[in-house]
Length: 587
Ligand code: ADP
Ligand code: MG
Image 1 (spheres, protein in one colour):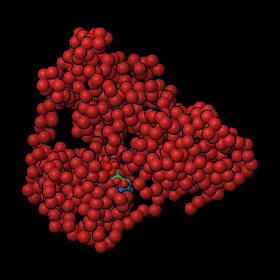
Image 2 (image 1 turned 90 degrees about the vertical axis):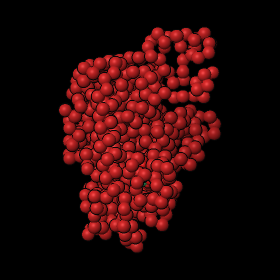
Image 3 (image 1 turned 120 degrees about the vertical axis):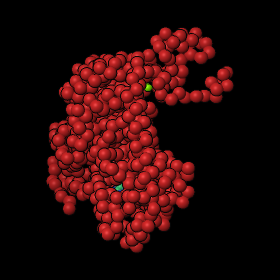
Image 4 (image 1 turned 30 degrees about the vertical axis):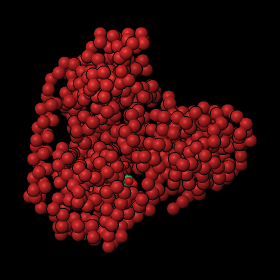
């Protein structure tokens, strides 16, 4: 159903803000300047939250994350020219991860185009190939253009809808008009019945079936039907990094800690909302077995049959429609969990979990990755057990993300975000702000876990990843966002390079003198005082070096009502070293 409203529109900016309000937009992420500041101010006057960032890149990342968490496009507002260029990072993030975003940008006055106007950029030509739609409306078509861009971003596989807003349109004084801007949720596509029964038949006959849960299943908010499918059929499941929580990590059929065994041993795999890209090793040998049948369920037809996916078994449809039908088709059947496949998964789980527990208890000084994650997890879980679903984890940084992924169990969907399909470092603080906005203010769209109550956002950031968006701590502080950030500080990208400050200073000296073998490209400043970033804008900072200090900071940080940075000094060089040919040859 659509609604028509007659509005008074004293300016183009007011018309834009009202159209956004009609679309149900509750939050705008952005960074203003002339002329888009007028839109932001009109939106604020209407009660839409405007979260003003320090860099468009982080704002655009936040809008995409908000889209993923709420299941509706996140809105980003930026200036033209450089603002658009910075926000391109978010466009890429939206398209590669299939997160919906409505991007609005200002542009120069229409009559000045080609003359070298203020922040002039042909954003439509630039962005058209990277967005689902790129439109420049005139005054009368503003509401319909915004609606169309919003719908395009949202329907089908999600991406970005872009609207270019020339200054003369934003500033124009105008007359009364009518706007129609309600966009209902997309109609859901269903499966071909013949294909569905063929797939059900194949699953029944499988010796080693597996269900893969991707972030598409999480975005689709399909957890209820997926949990029913798993509980009824007893098929083991494996979440991708952001598919974690669609079914609880604690579920006995969760094969995460036996990932390699589960992949390699499976003969029929039902893939719900995950692409066969690098994250799933393209569905190829040697990670998967040679004869494996990969059944892709995807909203996007062009995904089906890609890489090693079986096009003749793929189902094009919405997981929310396909899964209940598949569950019904398998009603009288369940997988015999006394199989050798389940036995092998169990055996690997026991072995790998024991190893992980042992590694976590290894005490080092300075501390190591596994050790600190174990301390943080135990401290946070005492304050808020995972089954309550009240912590949202945001994780980035090569080792920090990889190692923490299995250290923090997640029991509910959309409670863990990371660098995603593009392995993008620098998304963390924008994502954290988005999660805070999605979960801590009245927002019926952000459903997860047992309740809609407010959640604590916890970031696990490598020191390098943190650096990409450090100034957004000020954004968090300005809006009173009580986000808890652990900076896992090994003084470098990947591993750190120096064992102590003396060694680091020697490398610095070599660099200065132009000698061979100076600071590595992976070196960062030695034990930088990141905690001061929080202190300088009214948050709390902790510099920790010991387990006791970390535990205390984690507990106080969790309870704090301001942004907190816990700067955790860990062993530099404790992670896997990057090796280069010149090192091996001793050159
Ligand atoms: P992961 O990184 O977890 O492996 P991907 O981002 O690669 O997940 O894949 C997610 C997939 O989910 C995309 O191909 C997308 O088209 C699909 N998808 C998104 N929403 C739905 C839905 N409602 N029903 C079916 N598939 C969906
Ligand atoms: Mg590091």
